[in-house]
Image (cartoon, rainbow, N blue to C red; front, side, top):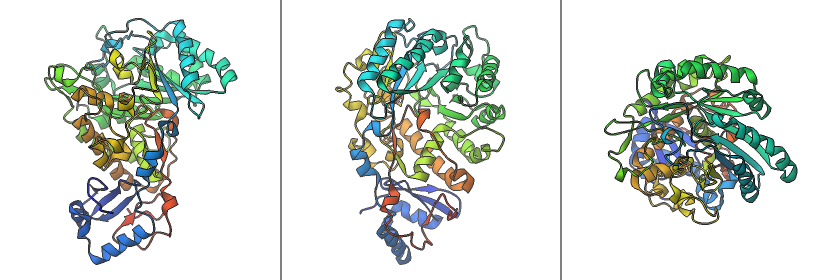
Length: 506
Ligand code: SF4
Ligand code: SF4
Protein backbone atom coordinates (compact mmCIF):
# COMPACT_ATOMS: atom_id res chain seq x y z
CA UNK A 1 0.00 0.00 0.00
CA UNK A 2 1.20 3.49 -0.85
CA UNK A 3 0.68 5.19 2.53
CA UNK A 4 0.12 8.94 2.47
CA UNK A 5 0.03 11.31 5.43
CA UNK A 6 -3.27 13.24 5.85
CA UNK A 7 -5.03 10.60 3.75
CA UNK A 8 -4.21 7.16 5.15
CA UNK A 9 -2.82 8.21 8.52
CA UNK A 10 -2.43 11.29 10.65
CA UNK A 11 0.39 12.27 12.97
CA UNK A 12 -1.13 14.04 15.97
CA UNK A 13 1.03 16.15 18.29
CA UNK A 14 1.11 14.73 21.79
CA UNK A 15 3.98 16.07 23.93
CA UNK A 16 7.63 17.01 23.51
CA UNK A 17 8.77 13.41 23.38
CA UNK A 18 5.90 11.61 21.68
CA UNK A 19 3.42 11.84 18.85
CA UNK A 20 0.37 9.76 17.96
CA UNK A 21 -0.06 7.84 14.74
CA UNK A 22 -3.75 7.50 13.84
CA UNK A 23 -4.71 5.02 11.12
CA UNK A 24 -7.62 6.13 8.93
CA UNK A 25 -8.46 2.62 7.80
CA UNK A 26 -9.16 1.05 11.19
CA UNK A 27 -8.87 3.87 13.79
CA UNK A 28 -6.00 2.25 15.64
CA UNK A 29 -3.66 4.62 17.42
CA UNK A 30 0.07 4.06 17.99
CA UNK A 31 2.41 6.11 20.13
CA UNK A 32 5.67 6.98 18.38
CA UNK A 33 8.66 9.11 19.30
CA UNK A 34 8.18 12.76 18.35
CA UNK A 35 11.16 12.58 16.02
CA UNK A 36 9.71 9.60 14.15
CA UNK A 37 6.36 11.39 14.06
CA UNK A 38 8.00 14.42 12.42
CA UNK A 39 9.49 12.18 9.73
CA UNK A 40 6.23 10.31 9.17
CA UNK A 41 4.47 13.61 8.63
CA UNK A 42 6.54 13.93 5.47
CA UNK A 43 6.54 10.38 4.17
CA UNK A 44 6.25 6.85 5.46
CA UNK A 45 9.24 5.92 3.31
CA UNK A 46 11.67 7.70 5.63
CA UNK A 47 11.75 4.97 8.28
CA UNK A 48 14.98 3.43 9.47
CA UNK A 49 15.55 -0.25 8.81
CA UNK A 50 14.58 -1.15 12.35
CA UNK A 51 11.37 0.89 12.17
CA UNK A 52 10.56 -0.51 8.78
CA UNK A 53 10.92 -4.08 10.05
CA UNK A 54 8.56 -3.36 12.91
CA UNK A 55 6.07 -1.73 10.56
CA UNK A 56 6.22 -4.73 8.22
CA UNK A 57 5.65 -7.08 11.15
CA UNK A 58 2.58 -5.09 12.18
CA UNK A 59 1.34 -5.23 8.60
CA UNK A 60 1.91 -8.97 8.36
CA UNK A 61 0.07 -9.51 11.63
CA UNK A 62 -2.97 -7.64 10.30
CA UNK A 63 -2.85 -4.57 12.53
CA UNK A 64 -2.61 -2.08 9.68
CA UNK A 65 -5.31 -3.49 7.43
CA UNK A 66 -8.00 -1.15 6.20
CA UNK A 67 -11.28 -2.41 7.66
CA UNK A 68 -13.25 0.81 7.18
CA UNK A 69 -13.31 1.28 3.40
CA UNK A 70 -14.88 -2.09 2.50
CA UNK A 71 -17.22 -1.85 5.47
CA UNK A 72 -18.54 1.52 4.29
CA UNK A 73 -19.16 0.22 0.78
CA UNK A 74 -21.43 -2.55 2.07
CA UNK A 75 -23.16 -0.66 4.90
CA UNK A 76 -26.53 1.05 5.00
CA UNK A 77 -27.54 3.80 7.42
CA UNK A 78 -29.97 1.41 9.08
CA UNK A 79 -27.00 -0.77 10.11
CA UNK A 80 -25.93 1.96 12.51
CA UNK A 81 -29.07 3.93 13.33
CA UNK A 82 -32.75 3.45 14.06
CA UNK A 83 -35.49 5.34 12.26
CA UNK A 84 -35.70 8.72 14.02
CA UNK A 85 -38.60 11.13 13.69
CA UNK A 86 -38.01 14.71 14.69
CA UNK A 87 -41.47 15.96 15.69
CA UNK A 88 -41.59 19.71 15.09
CA UNK A 89 -44.36 20.40 17.59
CA UNK A 90 -44.78 24.14 17.47
CA UNK A 91 -43.50 27.35 15.96
CA UNK A 92 -43.77 29.08 19.32
CA UNK A 93 -40.96 29.71 21.74
CA UNK A 94 -40.87 31.74 24.93
CA UNK A 95 -37.18 32.64 24.74
CA UNK A 96 -35.36 35.10 22.53
CA UNK A 97 -31.98 33.40 22.11
CA UNK A 98 -29.43 35.56 20.39
CA UNK A 99 -28.49 32.83 17.94
CA UNK A 100 -31.73 31.00 17.10
CA UNK A 101 -31.68 29.32 13.67
CA UNK A 102 -35.45 28.76 13.75
CA UNK A 103 -36.29 32.47 13.62
CA UNK A 104 -37.70 32.35 17.15
CA UNK A 105 -39.18 28.90 16.61
CA UNK A 106 -41.23 29.08 13.43
CA UNK A 107 -38.41 28.85 10.85
CA UNK A 108 -39.92 31.95 9.27
CA UNK A 109 -42.76 29.85 7.87
CA UNK A 110 -44.60 27.44 10.16
CA UNK A 111 -46.43 29.43 12.79
CA UNK A 112 -49.04 27.02 14.09
CA UNK A 113 -48.75 24.15 16.54
CA UNK A 114 -48.94 20.50 15.52
CA UNK A 115 -52.52 19.34 15.46
CA UNK A 116 -54.22 16.02 16.17
CA UNK A 117 -54.36 14.99 12.50
CA UNK A 118 -50.54 14.94 12.15
CA UNK A 119 -50.24 12.23 14.80
CA UNK A 120 -51.76 9.60 12.54
CA UNK A 121 -49.65 10.93 9.66
CA UNK A 122 -46.54 10.29 11.79
CA UNK A 123 -47.53 6.73 12.68
CA UNK A 124 -48.32 5.95 9.05
CA UNK A 125 -44.90 7.29 8.09
CA UNK A 126 -43.32 5.01 10.69
CA UNK A 127 -45.27 2.03 9.41
CA UNK A 128 -43.84 2.65 5.93
CA UNK A 129 -40.25 3.40 6.92
CA UNK A 130 -39.35 1.52 10.10
CA UNK A 131 -36.08 -0.37 9.71
CA UNK A 132 -35.26 -3.96 10.61
CA UNK A 133 -34.35 -2.97 14.16
CA UNK A 134 -38.06 -2.30 14.75
CA UNK A 135 -37.01 0.53 17.04
CA UNK A 136 -38.08 4.13 16.42
CA UNK A 137 -36.89 7.17 18.26
CA UNK A 138 -38.92 10.29 18.70
CA UNK A 139 -37.15 13.63 18.88
CA UNK A 140 -39.62 16.14 20.31
CA UNK A 141 -38.58 19.52 18.97
CA UNK A 142 -39.85 23.02 18.17
CA UNK A 143 -39.98 25.98 18.92
CA UNK A 144 -40.32 24.95 22.51
CA UNK A 145 -41.94 21.49 22.35
CA UNK A 146 -43.35 21.59 25.89
CA UNK A 147 -45.61 24.44 24.73
CA UNK A 148 -47.46 21.71 22.85
CA UNK A 149 -47.32 19.06 25.56
CA UNK A 150 -50.79 17.82 24.73
CA UNK A 151 -49.47 16.47 21.41
CA UNK A 152 -46.44 14.83 23.04
CA UNK A 153 -48.84 13.09 25.39
CA UNK A 154 -51.07 12.02 22.52
CA UNK A 155 -48.15 10.57 20.55
CA UNK A 156 -46.92 8.65 23.60
CA UNK A 157 -50.45 7.35 24.27
CA UNK A 158 -50.81 6.24 20.65
CA UNK A 159 -47.63 4.17 20.87
CA UNK A 160 -49.17 1.43 22.98
CA UNK A 161 -51.65 0.21 20.38
CA UNK A 162 -49.09 0.72 17.62
CA UNK A 163 -46.59 -1.48 19.47
CA UNK A 164 -49.25 -4.14 20.02
CA UNK A 165 -50.06 -4.08 16.33
CA UNK A 166 -46.52 -3.91 14.87
CA UNK A 167 -44.03 -4.82 17.60
CA UNK A 168 -42.22 -1.49 17.09
CA UNK A 169 -40.57 -0.11 20.25
CA UNK A 170 -39.93 3.57 20.95
CA UNK A 171 -37.16 5.72 22.41
CA UNK A 172 -38.03 9.25 23.54
CA UNK A 173 -35.88 12.32 23.51
CA UNK A 174 -36.84 15.96 23.85
CA UNK A 175 -34.86 19.11 23.05
CA UNK A 176 -36.25 21.72 25.41
CA UNK A 177 -35.37 25.01 27.06
CA UNK A 178 -37.11 23.61 30.17
CA UNK A 179 -38.48 27.00 31.21
CA UNK A 180 -41.91 25.37 31.48
CA UNK A 181 -43.01 22.06 32.93
CA UNK A 182 -46.69 21.41 32.21
CA UNK A 183 -48.57 19.14 34.62
CA UNK A 184 -47.98 15.46 33.77
CA UNK A 185 -44.60 16.14 32.16
CA UNK A 186 -42.54 14.54 34.90
CA UNK A 187 -44.59 11.33 35.15
CA UNK A 188 -44.36 11.00 31.35
CA UNK A 189 -40.58 11.53 31.39
CA UNK A 190 -40.29 8.91 34.12
CA UNK A 191 -42.59 6.31 32.59
CA UNK A 192 -40.84 6.44 29.18
CA UNK A 193 -37.24 6.94 30.45
CA UNK A 194 -36.96 10.16 28.46
CA UNK A 195 -33.67 11.59 27.33
CA UNK A 196 -34.11 15.27 28.21
CA UNK A 197 -31.73 17.52 26.30
CA UNK A 198 -31.81 20.94 27.97
CA UNK A 199 -30.47 23.99 26.19
CA UNK A 200 -28.32 25.62 28.84
CA UNK A 201 -25.18 27.44 27.79
CA UNK A 202 -23.32 27.48 31.11
CA UNK A 203 -23.59 29.33 34.40
CA UNK A 204 -26.02 32.19 34.89
CA UNK A 205 -23.75 34.90 33.42
CA UNK A 206 -23.29 33.15 30.09
CA UNK A 207 -26.70 31.56 29.89
CA UNK A 208 -28.72 34.69 30.68
CA UNK A 209 -26.71 36.66 28.17
CA UNK A 210 -27.36 34.13 25.38
CA UNK A 211 -30.84 32.91 26.21
CA UNK A 212 -33.03 35.67 27.68
CA UNK A 213 -36.80 35.57 27.81
CA UNK A 214 -38.76 37.61 25.29
CA UNK A 215 -39.02 40.28 28.01
CA UNK A 216 -35.25 40.42 28.25
CA UNK A 217 -35.05 38.67 31.61
CA UNK A 218 -32.70 35.86 32.57
CA UNK A 219 -33.92 32.26 32.24
CA UNK A 220 -31.16 30.40 34.10
CA UNK A 221 -32.73 30.24 37.57
CA UNK A 222 -36.01 28.82 36.29
CA UNK A 223 -34.30 26.23 34.11
CA UNK A 224 -32.06 25.06 36.93
CA UNK A 225 -35.06 24.73 39.22
CA UNK A 226 -36.80 22.59 36.57
CA UNK A 227 -33.65 20.52 35.97
CA UNK A 228 -33.72 19.66 39.67
CA UNK A 229 -37.35 18.57 39.40
CA UNK A 230 -36.57 16.39 36.38
CA UNK A 231 -33.59 14.87 38.14
CA UNK A 232 -35.69 14.11 41.22
CA UNK A 233 -38.42 12.55 39.06
CA UNK A 234 -36.38 9.48 38.17
CA UNK A 235 -32.87 8.09 38.03
CA UNK A 236 -33.59 6.54 34.63
CA UNK A 237 -34.29 9.88 33.01
CA UNK A 238 -31.14 10.92 31.12
CA UNK A 239 -30.46 14.62 31.50
CA UNK A 240 -28.21 16.25 28.88
CA UNK A 241 -26.87 19.82 29.08
CA UNK A 242 -26.73 21.19 25.56
CA UNK A 243 -24.37 24.14 25.38
CA UNK A 244 -23.79 26.57 22.54
CA UNK A 245 -20.59 28.62 22.79
CA UNK A 246 -20.58 32.15 21.44
CA UNK A 247 -18.21 34.00 23.77
CA UNK A 248 -14.97 33.54 25.69
CA UNK A 249 -15.77 35.00 29.11
CA UNK A 250 -16.53 33.11 31.25
CA UNK A 251 -14.62 30.40 29.44
CA UNK A 252 -16.13 27.16 28.18
CA UNK A 253 -14.23 25.26 30.87
CA UNK A 254 -15.63 27.52 33.59
CA UNK A 255 -19.14 27.09 32.24
CA UNK A 256 -18.81 23.30 32.07
CA UNK A 257 -17.44 23.21 35.60
CA UNK A 258 -20.31 25.41 36.77
CA UNK A 259 -22.98 23.07 35.34
CA UNK A 260 -21.02 19.98 36.38
CA UNK A 261 -20.97 21.17 39.99
CA UNK A 262 -24.77 20.82 40.27
CA UNK A 263 -24.38 17.07 39.69
CA UNK A 264 -27.61 16.96 37.67
CA UNK A 265 -26.47 16.17 34.14
CA UNK A 266 -25.49 12.76 32.79
CA UNK A 267 -24.04 14.12 29.58
CA UNK A 268 -23.10 17.38 27.91
CA UNK A 269 -23.25 18.42 24.27
CA UNK A 270 -21.08 21.36 23.29
CA UNK A 271 -21.36 23.16 19.97
CA UNK A 272 -19.57 26.18 18.61
CA UNK A 273 -21.90 29.03 17.80
CA UNK A 274 -21.37 30.88 14.57
CA UNK A 275 -21.30 34.62 14.19
CA UNK A 276 -21.65 36.59 10.99
CA UNK A 277 -18.36 38.33 10.25
CA UNK A 278 -19.93 41.74 10.83
CA UNK A 279 -20.88 40.60 14.35
CA UNK A 280 -24.47 41.69 13.88
CA UNK A 281 -26.07 38.52 15.14
CA UNK A 282 -25.26 35.01 16.20
CA UNK A 283 -25.82 31.60 14.79
CA UNK A 284 -25.65 28.24 16.54
CA UNK A 285 -24.20 24.83 16.00
CA UNK A 286 -25.70 21.37 15.87
CA UNK A 287 -25.13 17.88 14.68
CA UNK A 288 -21.61 17.86 15.99
CA UNK A 289 -20.65 20.76 13.76
CA UNK A 290 -21.28 24.45 13.43
CA UNK A 291 -24.85 25.59 13.61
CA UNK A 292 -25.79 28.65 11.70
CA UNK A 293 -28.73 30.17 13.35
CA UNK A 294 -30.63 33.06 12.02
CA UNK A 295 -28.93 32.11 8.77
CA UNK A 296 -30.58 29.44 6.72
CA UNK A 297 -29.81 30.98 3.33
CA UNK A 298 -26.57 30.32 1.51
CA UNK A 299 -23.72 32.64 2.43
CA UNK A 300 -23.64 33.99 -1.12
CA UNK A 301 -26.86 35.83 -0.47
CA UNK A 302 -26.12 36.71 3.16
CA UNK A 303 -24.70 40.09 4.07
CA UNK A 304 -21.54 38.58 5.56
CA UNK A 305 -20.20 35.04 5.77
CA UNK A 306 -20.74 33.30 9.08
CA UNK A 307 -17.74 32.23 11.04
CA UNK A 308 -17.11 30.15 14.13
CA UNK A 309 -16.30 32.17 17.20
CA UNK A 310 -12.60 32.92 16.89
CA UNK A 311 -11.63 31.68 20.34
CA UNK A 312 -13.60 28.44 20.22
CA UNK A 313 -10.80 26.04 19.27
CA UNK A 314 -8.62 27.41 22.08
CA UNK A 315 -11.49 26.90 24.52
CA UNK A 316 -12.04 23.37 23.19
CA UNK A 317 -8.39 22.54 23.77
CA UNK A 318 -8.51 23.94 27.31
CA UNK A 319 -11.57 21.84 28.08
CA UNK A 320 -10.08 18.66 26.62
CA UNK A 321 -6.97 19.11 28.78
CA UNK A 322 -9.18 19.01 31.86
CA UNK A 323 -11.76 16.58 30.51
CA UNK A 324 -10.61 13.30 32.15
CA UNK A 325 -10.74 15.03 35.56
CA UNK A 326 -14.49 15.57 35.20
CA UNK A 327 -15.10 11.84 35.63
CA UNK A 328 -15.27 11.57 39.38
CA UNK A 329 -16.92 9.27 41.81
CA UNK A 330 -19.90 11.05 43.29
CA UNK A 331 -20.66 13.03 40.13
CA UNK A 332 -23.01 11.50 37.56
CA UNK A 333 -21.15 13.07 34.62
CA UNK A 334 -20.61 10.42 31.92
CA UNK A 335 -19.06 12.59 29.25
CA UNK A 336 -19.58 14.99 26.39
CA UNK A 337 -21.53 12.96 23.86
CA UNK A 338 -19.59 13.90 20.73
CA UNK A 339 -16.23 13.37 22.47
CA UNK A 340 -17.28 10.00 23.79
CA UNK A 341 -18.42 8.93 20.34
CA UNK A 342 -14.99 9.71 18.88
CA UNK A 343 -13.24 8.03 21.82
CA UNK A 344 -15.40 4.96 21.30
CA UNK A 345 -14.59 4.80 17.58
CA UNK A 346 -10.85 4.90 18.35
CA UNK A 347 -10.88 2.56 21.34
CA UNK A 348 -13.37 -0.04 20.13
CA UNK A 349 -12.84 0.08 16.38
CA UNK A 350 -16.00 1.68 15.07
CA UNK A 351 -16.65 3.88 12.06
CA UNK A 352 -19.26 6.40 10.92
CA UNK A 353 -21.34 5.47 7.89
CA UNK A 354 -22.32 9.13 7.45
CA UNK A 355 -22.11 12.46 9.27
CA UNK A 356 -25.75 12.20 10.35
CA UNK A 357 -28.68 10.04 9.39
CA UNK A 358 -30.68 12.82 7.69
CA UNK A 359 -32.35 11.74 4.50
CA UNK A 360 -32.13 8.03 5.23
CA UNK A 361 -33.24 7.16 8.75
CA UNK A 362 -33.86 10.65 10.16
CA UNK A 363 -36.72 12.94 9.14
CA UNK A 364 -38.47 16.00 10.53
CA UNK A 365 -42.27 16.13 10.44
CA UNK A 366 -43.87 19.58 10.88
CA UNK A 367 -47.41 20.79 11.66
CA UNK A 368 -48.08 21.25 7.93
CA UNK A 369 -47.34 17.51 7.42
CA UNK A 370 -44.17 18.34 5.51
CA UNK A 371 -41.29 15.89 5.83
CA UNK A 372 -37.76 17.29 5.70
CA UNK A 373 -34.44 15.45 5.81
CA UNK A 374 -33.04 17.96 8.32
CA UNK A 375 -34.69 19.94 11.11
CA UNK A 376 -32.62 23.02 10.27
CA UNK A 377 -33.99 23.15 6.75
CA UNK A 378 -37.61 23.39 7.79
CA UNK A 379 -38.78 26.51 6.00
CA UNK A 380 -36.99 25.48 2.79
CA UNK A 381 -39.75 23.73 0.82
CA UNK A 382 -37.27 22.85 -1.93
CA UNK A 383 -35.80 20.21 0.40
CA UNK A 384 -39.12 18.66 1.27
CA UNK A 385 -39.18 14.87 0.97
CA UNK A 386 -42.00 13.61 -1.19
CA UNK A 387 -40.80 10.06 -1.56
CA UNK A 388 -38.00 8.90 0.67
CA UNK A 389 -36.96 6.37 -1.94
CA UNK A 390 -35.88 9.00 -4.46
CA UNK A 391 -34.26 12.39 -4.67
CA UNK A 392 -32.08 11.99 -1.60
CA UNK A 393 -28.80 11.01 -3.26
CA UNK A 394 -27.14 14.29 -2.34
CA UNK A 395 -27.95 13.61 1.29
CA UNK A 396 -26.67 10.08 1.42
CA UNK A 397 -23.69 9.99 -0.94
CA UNK A 398 -21.00 8.10 1.04
CA UNK A 399 -17.80 9.80 2.07
CA UNK A 400 -15.66 7.69 -0.26
CA UNK A 401 -17.61 8.98 -3.27
CA UNK A 402 -16.86 12.63 -2.46
CA UNK A 403 -13.88 14.11 -4.28
CA UNK A 404 -12.43 15.86 -1.21
CA UNK A 405 -13.75 13.75 1.67
CA UNK A 406 -12.41 10.56 0.08
CA UNK A 407 -8.87 11.83 0.65
CA UNK A 408 -9.39 13.17 4.18
CA UNK A 409 -7.70 11.29 7.05
CA UNK A 410 -10.70 11.86 9.38
CA UNK A 411 -13.33 10.62 6.93
CA UNK A 412 -14.51 7.50 8.78
CA UNK A 413 -14.86 9.44 12.02
CA UNK A 414 -16.56 12.48 10.48
CA UNK A 415 -18.69 10.79 7.84
CA UNK A 416 -18.66 13.70 5.41
CA UNK A 417 -19.92 16.89 7.03
CA UNK A 418 -23.22 18.58 7.80
CA UNK A 419 -25.22 19.13 4.60
CA UNK A 420 -27.04 22.13 6.03
CA UNK A 421 -23.77 23.85 6.93
CA UNK A 422 -22.49 23.11 3.45
CA UNK A 423 -25.65 24.60 1.99
CA UNK A 424 -25.31 27.79 4.01
CA UNK A 425 -21.62 28.13 3.17
CA UNK A 426 -21.67 27.19 -0.50
CA UNK A 427 -25.27 26.98 -1.75
CA UNK A 428 -25.01 23.22 -2.30
CA UNK A 429 -25.33 20.24 0.01
CA UNK A 430 -22.02 18.71 -1.03
CA UNK A 431 -19.84 21.81 -1.35
CA UNK A 432 -17.78 21.63 1.85
CA UNK A 433 -17.89 24.23 4.56
CA UNK A 434 -14.16 24.58 5.20
CA UNK A 435 -14.61 25.89 8.70
CA UNK A 436 -16.79 22.92 9.65
CA UNK A 437 -14.14 20.58 8.25
CA UNK A 438 -11.43 22.28 10.24
CA UNK A 439 -13.52 21.92 13.39
CA UNK A 440 -14.28 18.25 12.75
CA UNK A 441 -10.62 17.43 12.24
CA UNK A 442 -9.50 19.43 15.29
CA UNK A 443 -12.16 17.66 17.33
CA UNK A 444 -10.91 14.21 16.32
CA UNK A 445 -7.29 15.21 16.96
CA UNK A 446 -8.15 16.69 20.35
CA UNK A 447 -10.20 13.72 21.51
CA UNK A 448 -7.63 11.15 20.34
CA UNK A 449 -4.96 13.10 22.24
CA UNK A 450 -7.19 13.13 25.32
CA UNK A 451 -7.81 9.39 25.05
CA UNK A 452 -4.06 8.81 24.89
CA UNK A 453 -3.41 11.03 27.87
CA UNK A 454 -6.23 9.75 30.08
CA UNK A 455 -5.81 6.89 32.50
CA UNK A 456 -6.86 3.31 31.94
CA UNK A 457 -10.05 3.75 33.95
CA UNK A 458 -11.26 6.38 31.46
CA UNK A 459 -10.39 4.25 28.43
CA UNK A 460 -12.03 1.14 29.83
CA UNK A 461 -15.23 2.95 30.78
CA UNK A 462 -18.39 1.42 29.22
CA UNK A 463 -19.91 3.67 26.55
CA UNK A 464 -23.59 3.21 25.73
CA UNK A 465 -24.26 5.96 23.25
CA UNK A 466 -26.44 4.40 20.60
CA UNK A 467 -29.77 5.54 22.05
CA UNK A 468 -28.65 9.09 22.70
CA UNK A 469 -28.85 10.47 19.16
CA UNK A 470 -25.29 11.74 19.12
CA UNK A 471 -24.55 14.15 16.25
CA UNK A 472 -28.03 14.06 14.68
CA UNK A 473 -28.04 10.27 14.83
CA UNK A 474 -24.65 9.69 13.19
CA UNK A 475 -24.87 6.04 12.10
CA UNK A 476 -21.93 4.14 13.60
CA UNK A 477 -20.96 0.47 13.20
CA UNK A 478 -18.18 -1.74 14.57
CA UNK A 479 -15.38 -2.34 12.05
CA UNK A 480 -14.35 -5.73 13.50
CA UNK A 481 -10.67 -4.83 13.13
CA UNK A 482 -9.73 -7.58 15.60
CA UNK A 483 -10.77 -10.12 12.98
CA UNK A 484 -7.76 -9.01 10.90
CA UNK A 485 -5.29 -9.88 13.65
CA UNK A 486 -3.50 -12.94 12.38
CA UNK A 487 -0.96 -13.10 15.21
CA UNK A 488 -0.39 -11.54 18.61
CA UNK A 489 0.97 -8.04 18.25
CA UNK A 490 4.69 -8.23 17.49
CA UNK A 491 7.34 -6.72 19.77
CA UNK A 492 6.96 -3.00 19.50
CA UNK A 493 9.59 -0.43 20.24
CA UNK A 494 8.83 2.24 17.67
CA UNK A 495 5.07 1.75 17.22
CA UNK A 496 3.47 1.31 20.61
CA UNK A 497 -0.25 0.50 20.36
CA UNK A 498 -2.77 2.36 22.42
CA UNK A 499 -4.72 -0.43 24.03
CA UNK A 500 -7.63 -0.39 26.42
CA UNK A 501 -5.83 -2.97 28.52
CA UNK A 502 -2.86 -2.91 30.86
CA UNK A 503 -0.64 -3.07 27.77
CA UNK A 504 -1.18 0.63 27.29
CA UNK A 505 2.10 2.44 26.78
CA UNK A 506 1.20 6.07 27.22
S1 SF4 B 1 -16.48 16.87 5.69
FE1 SF4 B 1 -14.39 17.66 5.88
S2 SF4 B 1 -13.59 16.75 7.77
FE2 SF4 B 1 -15.38 15.57 7.14
S3 SF4 B 1 -14.57 13.89 5.89
FE3 SF4 B 1 -15.11 15.55 4.49
S4 SF4 B 1 -13.18 16.70 4.22
FE4 SF4 B 1 -12.97 15.43 6.08
S1 SF4 C 1 -27.62 18.06 7.88
FE1 SF4 C 1 -27.56 16.46 9.43
S2 SF4 C 1 -25.97 17.13 10.90
FE2 SF4 C 1 -26.57 18.88 9.69
S3 SF4 C 1 -28.14 19.86 10.96
FE3 SF4 C 1 -29.17 18.57 9.44
S4 SF4 C 1 -29.55 16.65 10.50
FE4 SF4 C 1 -28.00 17.77 11.68
